[in-house]
Image (cartoon, rainbow, N blue to C red; front, side, top):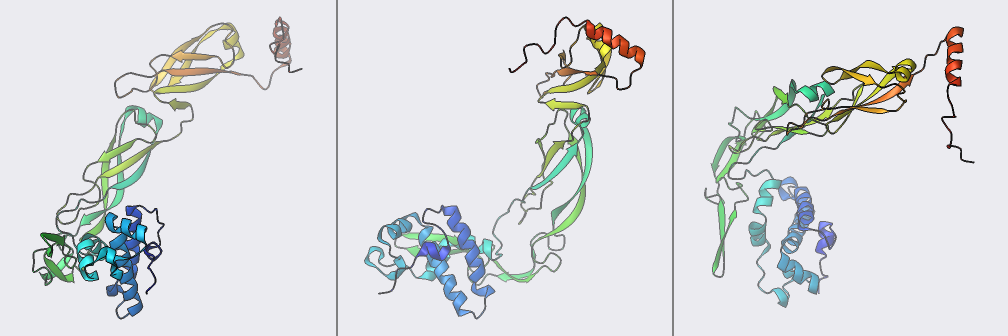
Length: 354
């Protein structure tokens, strides 16, 4: 009695593998061992059959359940699965779409092109006001030589007789499956397009204009419809997705729609009070410092931040930093000593850890 085949081991997956993981493993192995890619290699041919046999069972919930319960293969002819169809029928019914995907068969019907993803950096000022940028990228375009078909010459598919479908009866049921030879097109390719190598697509450089909306932030994604890679079989192109990053600013820090600024002031401005000019994202504002302003004290300039999509505007927060002169004269030094004497108590009182 032949040893029971371990289908999980054949596909290289665990027993709790998902259907997607099983499909992924099958595609990889089928591509590796397919006879068309290994002409005359009997070992590869047998391995290919094993891979398809394993997939036929593990991809079918009912067969997989029986296999897991009894540890036997329906291909062993056991009583629990009598009358199992031959391998060729199972392949034809269960793998038509995967077959065309793996081995380049052209699938019937239009297929949308894939999206392109690229990055774009803007300044904080551009993020605030909005901007128009031009960028150059490489994208797939439909081959003009073959009209995007990838085909230079073809004949009616001998397997499906041009219908694009294969039919098989199982008792009262008649089942249709996409023809694996022509991928459902009804035509078998005899000569691929020389220009695109049968891909139906070529690459071209294209410059696009991108409008950056006001208020954009780090991680925002812009989408340009129809500016992605070309579709297949008359399908529409994909989209261009642009991931935006905002360049760090030397003065401002943005948090949501609010802006933060560290503002240096002189000792005199802080001690005596003053009106000082403050840079903002869209100009200059005048802020009043009250006498006795402390270092680190925060002031708010209302509605000087970013504008939200709803129209509400954030605020700007100004943190005062007292700038101390480095080179001072003897006269200034004496004046500072008088100021030092004006402190009634130690400003660090109560901070001792003793």
